[in-house]
Image (cartoon, rainbow, N blue to C red):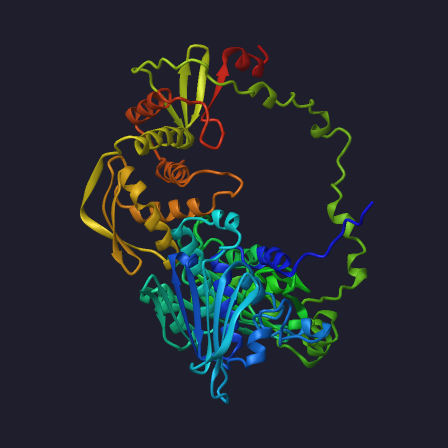
Length: 618
């Protein structure tokens, strides 16, 4: 038997490695921008064409490279950032593995121009499919200009998996803004298809946040600044009235590296508890600085997921810092001892704090834990204090003749008796019958065999879904023109996505036109949509659209229809008139699938007379 294990050719190995690092044009943008930052550039310019599929070019005025370094940078795992294992635990640079340029060269046609300040001429290199096509001296300015053309030209199957230009553009903008926010002291510009998207002058962090998010946030930002022995936190959070239905304006950086962390996002969200609605998302741009030895950034190819040595203490510090910032600006309630005069009479308040009391407090384990460096998260407990902890949970003894003991066993749970069966025949509803609304959410509907318990929001979602699905396949829906058109301002990422949806939205009863600079004018809305909440509906629709599970292979139009049906549906808690309830029930049973929502949940439950009799033991 011949041997079966062979070494892969370098070109093939590079293409396989590129699949981990360069997943889409935005991946290449991220790597090239971070390289420019590491090179010490003060000005960085990004140019893309065809959403990065035709061209991605990054030009910087950084340190540049020598002729040998310019050739070596395209080799796999060639890097100037680390030389030994210990260096992995002291990383301060954005890149360090030496994979980016090798991966880019494996899947694109690359041109590099670079020059150091002390060199008379620069170096030009042209690479295709990991092979150097040309290398020669060139007259160029100090710094580096790298252009990658025709992404995935050598692996067309990968190119076919790229999304639409609008979707890919949104990802590119995401990566650009993350780097631009992390380094406000640098100048950044971004041009797409010869049109300037961003021109960001160097300045303070607040100036950069306002440049990116809009001037309307100038007075809406709350400063966060906490320094501890373990870590430092600084940045800004938005006041509660800036919370949106979309989660786009949320940026978290660790040692100037953008990260994704649902755990730390929860820490920020918990600080806003009871300040914003549960379905809203606050704005925040937060920077966490801590010893690189406490962080492992080498756990994911994109370096956007990291591992903390002590994740719980970081969570606690982030939550406390945001709460403190909101409290300092009188946004969260603070303790007011004047509210209860009895507090002033307590010994701890009224009696002086004597030297003996000070000595007793200083000798306690709790005091020492807070006075030691890096010990704020470690509280040593006195085990003697916990000796009787079990007694706290033991039920109080009851006399043997207690009514509780003499009480009969409860009847079997009747959940099993409520097994719902769906209507198989359209309901013939008596138009004169009075319907009952329960809890402003459910509707009691009489039926020949008993009654139906209908969920008004679920029912309306089903009605709207079938109506919208039919509209986009036919001539569209009627538009109600607005007397005073509204201007909708979106983030750059959402605006790129929204441009792609306008055509289908116009079929669904909207009249929307681009107005430049990420603004859109809403000229009209669907005739059956309540006036006054158009912006909120569109923001919520975008949020739902963006976060469809990738496992659900819906078309763009299907996702839009589902999102709009969910946002336009009347919500639980809305009081309905008899006429509205009758109309809702009639339209539901005219649907092709009246018994289930678009997600498969029931729109109503049927209770039959024999089930009701069993509940009452009849």
